[in-house]
Image 1 (cartoon, rainbow, N blue to C red):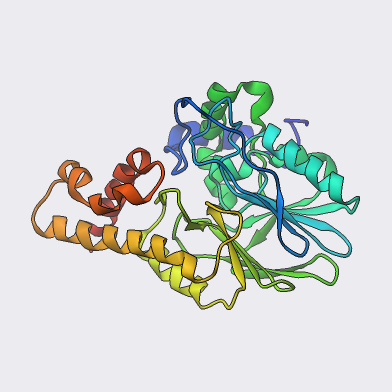
Image 2 (cartoon, helix red, strand yellow):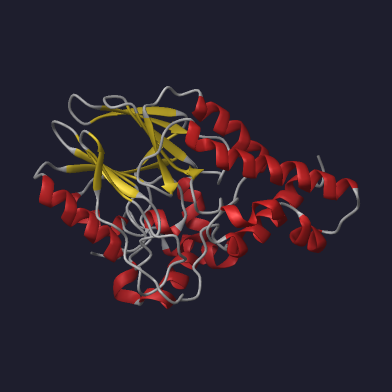
Amino acid sequence: MNCTDTRLVTRRQAVLALLGSAVSACALGATRAGARRPPPFEEVAHGVFIRSGVDEDANAANGDAIANVGFIIGRDCVATMDAGGSLEDGETMRAEIRRRTSLPIRYVILSHAHPDHVFGAGAFLEDKPAFVGHSRLANALAIRGEYYRARLESELGKSRTGCVVAPTLLVERTRSIDLGNRVLELTAHPKAHTDNDLSVVDTQTGTLLASDLLFVRRVPALDGSLRGWLKELQVLKAIRARRAVPGHGPASVDWPASAAGLERYLNTLLAETRAALARGVTIEEAVNVVGRSERGKWALFDDYHGRNVTQAYKELEWE
């Protein structure tokens, strides 16, 4: 991998990243005991292969393979859904693609800017694909990308981490990609989980690849707009998909039934944050009282819920 590739985020953008960076909603955490490798890729629908990530923060043992990632094989070419959480993770997915097909990898879809979904992109540079992202993805990577890279490097080491690869094909609202008798419908969403979320529908199999617009089992991470996420969840629920692939959780889940837990969590966060604001509860106090009924229902709750409350409080404070 050539880290001076022209598609990488520029040096000026890297400086902006150091000035404007914020902690990722899928933050890079301290190494945890009992870290495990993710399961193998499974074919959740014809030609759709998904590897579910482990419910942990990034660490040396799991190689930041903590998000659900995968690929779709068409008649003429292949598209990935996300790239993996590190160069090593991306290389693992590329090897899996090559084990199954010799078709060219023409599209690497990057669902949003969080490191567990994009840092494997460098593994695909030699394929010269279009790196596909939301119209706001490039700016998000410019602001945060080098910060994320430095944090991930501290966990994994430089050789395993990868570079920040900027998108080369942007989606303003919707776009169709034809893999050869197989059309993927891409949607760029308004501010929700982040401000640069992209979802994909494989029209051939009726599979919704929702990425982090859908969390199952692992606690949701709010890095955009709470009200916006609830609104976009309704948009997604209107899609008549046969199944969904969440950004975290099982490789495939029933749709839209699998959205119930996320919707409950977000509505609880909304209602209880508003109630806390009405009572004059401070932001520091709100972290300890809002949404505590959800604590036993999600993995990594204590790692992320407090930050979600803080984000919600700031958003709702002036409504």
